[in-house]
Image (cartoon, rainbow, N blue to C red; front, side, top):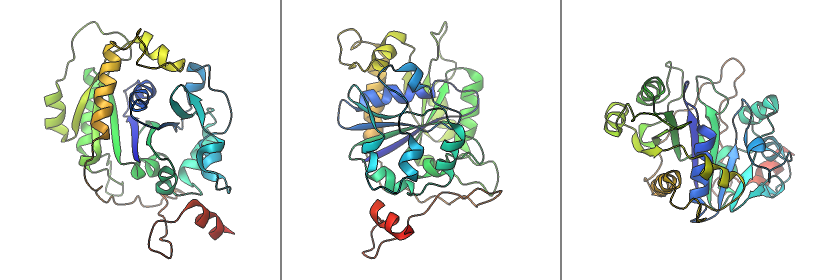
Length: 286
């Protein structure tokens, strides 16, 4: 299992489309789950006719039933998807105070888990979930302002103050994208991005509305109509790079609870020394 958070810093768009493209590319190699965890609301329900309002991330992390993903996952072609209903308050509650710790929850899936966490900022409710992911992909529109903001955020590991939890640079990746068709070349080179931030630059996702529409309809990116799409080729390249092992994850300092923020939950070891299962956690509450 490998978990990947896809996020954007202020001024960057296209986070959901990037997460969707990467998930579709990764699904060619094995089971892949796409989770929409953006507290500002989701867009997949309006993009994908096959998806419908049903269980969401709140139902998954707050349930006492040890049924895992089976009750809330929907199918979109080869993808497993948990879309958001846009119920921001419920989703924020689930993100801040999950009944099941994120490492345990993400570990219940056998394949790759890609999480669309939307915009990241100080004290974002998604920080606990981001901390539990193996890799964090920062999406930046290939324009001067969004790229500069993303580079600054990555160079500081997301820290805005001494009390903020940071993300080690070896877990950060940067991807540039086009929200709409571009009229000129990229303004910042990959070498600039990696040299300034220290975060690995994985590539650029060009705009291709036709290919994205095929994915939203549950179609395969191996379809003849899009298999030569520049977006599909780039998504495959980036997904393969993300799947590559990067060694053991560096420990991250936890956020200090403040102003009612509970901070990310830390699993309590089970008697045999391993991380607890969902069943053990549910039984413990009783």
